[in-house]
Length: 116
Image (cartoon, rainbow, N blue to C red):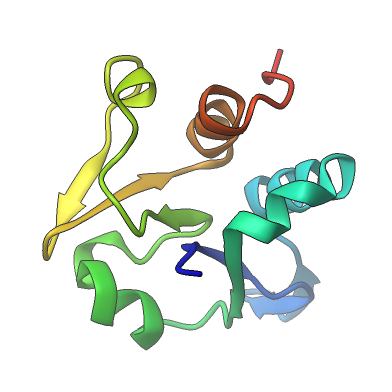
């Protein structure tokens, strides 16, 4: 079964001042996956390092779109989602960036609760 690919940053990455950080948007998406574990059946979840370049993402949607979280769709978006969300498109692939857009997509396609 082919699934959408979700890229999240690994936790405890080091930035600028040498302190460990986490990505709030990635943490939100991880929390939604905890609320609705059935979503994981539709996803290939991959964790990437904070440091750029993030080659796994670049290979799919180019270097201009390597921010996380990012959901890369296996197939074009369902009509119900494409009329309500603005998708990026690169290298023939559709994608959504950011926790709010990703979780709204899941609510439209997989009928889980919407973010409030």
